[in-house]
Structures are given as C-alpha cells and as structure tokens.
Image (tube, rainbow, N blue to C red; front, side, top):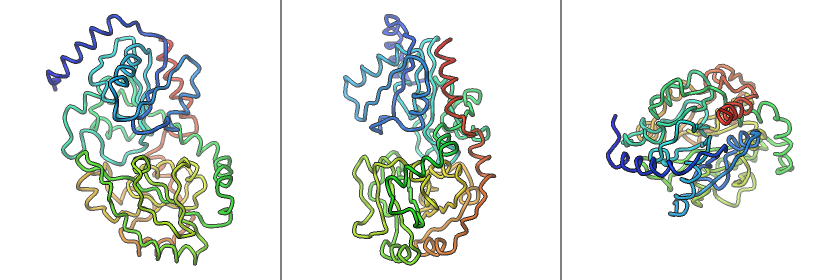
Length: 364
C-alpha cells in the first residue's frame, strides 16, 4: 500500500534534515507517552544494558518543543527502543545504520490491536513499518502482530517478556515486598482485581459501570476473611476516574503499587480483558474472568482468541455468579498448557535475551 502524499512529503523533509545529523552510538529508550515513568518491563532491559543510553518520557499532548526534542534524538541514536505506539516513526525515516526495537507492553495474544480494531485507519501501519525487532512472548502469538501491525513474521522475535523474570526468579522477594506494604493482610485470603479500560472507535469510555455490588461483595469478604484489592488501569488512574467506593474495610484501592507486586501477593486474580493475567500465569494461581459487558466488548473491540474457551480459569458475567465462584473455587490449578501456549518464551531469562539483542545492534 502506497503512503499518502502528506506522509511522503514529511518523510522527505526529515530525510533531508538527517543528512546533517550524524548518528551517535547511543541506545535511546522512549517511554510510553501515556505513563509518567518507564514501564517495568522495559525498565528491566534499560537497567541491564551496558552501553551508552538515554531515556526520554514526554507525556501527551506533545508541545512543539517536545516534538523537536524527541525527533532530534530519534534521528541521532544508533538504537531506539520503544514499548508503545509512537507515530513519530511514520514520519521520520531511519538511516540504514539505525535499529528500532519494539518491546511491546502487552504480553500474550488477547485484545485486538492496530489495523484489526473496528474502524482502524490504514495509515496506522506506517508507524510500525521500520521495526528491526518486535519482541513477543511465544512463537505462536506472531499472528496478532502480522495482522494488527502489518509486520513481517521474521521481524517478530519470541524472546520473552522481561517482567516475567521477576515473577519466576524473585517470587519470594516480591511477596515480602507486598507484605511490607500490607503487613495486616498476611493471614487473609487476598483477591486482586485488575480490570482494563474500554476504548471504542478511538474514544475512551470513562463512565463504564463495572457492575459490582460492593455491599454484597463486602459481606462475602467478611464471611470468608478475605480482602479485595483493586487497581484500576493506568489510564483511568492518569485521568482520575473513580469507581471504587469508600467506607468498606475489606475493599482496598491502590494506585501507586506496581501490578506485579500485587500479583505476587494475590491468592487469586480477577480480571476481564486485561493482559495482566498472562503475567499471573507464571505463578499458577486461580484466575477468574469477570466480564459483564462481554458481548459489547467483543463486538466493539474484539479478541484474537475464542473467548472464554481459550483462557484458563473461571468465567462469569454477573456479580452474583462472581461471588458464588469465589465461595467454591479450587485453589489447586494447573495452567501449564496456557503458559506454554501464550508465554512459552518466558523462562526467567527474557531480560537477558532482549538486552543482548539491543547490544548486538548497538555494536554493529
């Protein structure tokens, strides 16, 4: 597919500018423009590198200065690593001696992305045309990215998901960190709820009703000596969207605790369409998918799998059913089939492999 004339003109302008800007031996990391700090998955790789490196995080909306600043470092860095969708790469043509690595923030194969979303713009593919490597979590999930981003299969590298190294290698340390934050929860049943956000046709749904009967849930929590820990999706936290009520002793909302620490402390995970469950597969503990809006989400956003047939754990669509499952759930589970299927490259050495690839590009 030929690029629109407007993009071709911008490409030409940047190409002329880059003629006067030499490439420096530097690994540039561009943090997601929707997060105030580098995602832990990418931070682990950044910290593991033994080379000259620079980190830039600029939040949306970009100012003119931000655009110039980021563009300059893109045009002058030997290796560029990103973990989100960066439209700069539709407009700035990289030189032959530069390398672009996408350390994608979503593990596994789950929610539809990019060109596979309803009403997706065909020009979205141009942001992804220049990848030298796109890091994935398993050999068999490549189809999400060849379809969603228009990538060639050889670009997709199943090197694993660095964050899972912590859950595999440092589970006990993470649990201790959890109890350092919540010492009063040590002998209680800990249920962690990590729902995702909704975005349909490019518009965030900020008033979504998660359909939880908080009073009935709290009654169950008291009966079972359990606690219910909620962390909203980072985008909802960023936009100060509140849906968790106050006044219930056993319902705890957190905003500044990393999700992987919550996973390490959780006896059970409840989610909906969040990819956080892939991380939790590393711990082989029970998972419940609570999806009251399943029909709407599947029609307006869509998944790459047969849902709920191709996910582990329990599934329900009403709060009453959710509470009933919590009463009877078996905590002795075996999700090894799903772990191999979706996260087969995650063996505790993902960070090492991704860092090695970047250093190889750096030293070319």
